[in-house]
Image 1 (cartoon, rainbow, N blue to C red):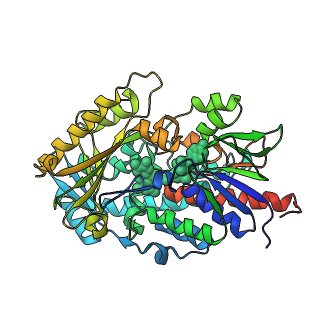
Image 2 (image 1 turned 120 degrees about the vertical axis):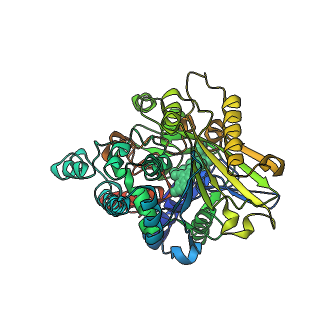
Image 3 (image 1 turned 45 degrees about the vertical axis):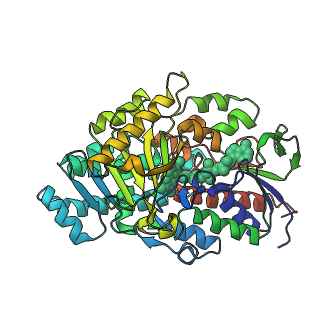
Length: 502
Ligand SMILES: Cc1cc2nc3c(=O)[nH]c(=O)nc-3n(C[C@H](O)[C@H](O)[C@H](O)COP(=O)(O)OP(=O)(O)OC[C@H]3O[C@@H](n4cnc5c(N)ncnc54)[C@H](O)[C@@H]3O)c2cc1C
């Protein structure tokens, strides 16, 4: 098919690049404008002194979704990414000094469970089966489909689905049906944080996350998560997509019913038949579009939490750490309340460490380590009361103290260099509202499905959205689905209006 209709995409994150491939395959002429020097956004990469860091995403979860979308893009995910299925998926560390392998080996998992709590092995089977059932039901009814009008969501079928998904039940209450031991309750609910949520506040159907980890595994691409970006990028370039880096977009050019193109920060104007926005949706309404009631409404929505991330180049390898290690520290529940309610941090925060050298030696110089420490943190608070220097120091001190407790007593002496991303850094780096990197809009039930901002603008019918802040949600698997759903919508709309150029 000859390339006729011109599409401009703002942002070269996973969502933007995947959409570029979908549209280019269908004959669109596609150009992508990215403000940063490199592609990937929150799935970016940084290399310093031979240490390679994934800047955001580190876990390839729900590989079935990657396979589905890669397949639709004409790519074989397993060949492209050369993944390893991690075993155990991760190691959990608790404040009482105990640890727990979150393993896919049924025997090992059940032996560990029974040692902690008699009868829990049987409950585990039920919990995982039900969680994976939630995954399938929400994929079919909620996530992997476009909602074009409200009655596709508010109908008897959807109400039954929302009941089946136990959307009214908090995950931390639901887990009590299965496990009494507080460590097990945490081990199977903390995953809500992957999508920036408080497990004490958000619904039970997010048990689909641990269930998918056990059933489908958590994979690691050969050279880290950035290879997802590289694979999509080379396909896009092969199809003729043009990428422009260090080209921030300042404004969407519109008239009353449609958009006509974009204006770059350097004043250049690029005209297009359609514009697709991969940058954060609330940011776009607040900065790139004329002010509207929607920008004000978006300010009142619920936003996900953020993170303080330390990247350390370390001149020693610590055997205490797994590829993924998660420290769930006491007082745990108060720690969540500090982040989500008080918009601050506890002195002993929970955190996660990515140590890729255990699977991929090329991530650091020989006998050295590359560590990324992700400390869930509050979103940026508009009152300006947060002291980020202080919070960053608190997070760092808490991490170091906790690591000393597992025998990494000399860690401070072995950190060769440190790079730190605070919520403010993330806000500047990717233009994510409030630095809410796991959303930005939170995944409450009233901000999902039909209620999440749609992937087509209500007034400018040739203006579309793709990425974590639109439907179906955040995290690379959902962002890939977003690219598929938005592209389907664009293509269907163009076919429907029988645009002669197409
Ligand atoms: C610390 C952290 C850990 C994470 N861990 C995981 C994980 O383990 N697994 C997982 O699946 N997900 C994880 N995620 C989430 C995942 O990284 C995101 O869901 C995903 O990368 C978002 O992709 P996107 O395309 O929607 O947006 P983005 O990656 O934010 O891309 C948007 C792009 O638009 C560009 N842009 C913005 N404004 C403009 C402008 N005005 N002009 C031009 N360009 C602009 C930005 O620079 C950016 O490159 C993590 C995220 C973080 C931050």
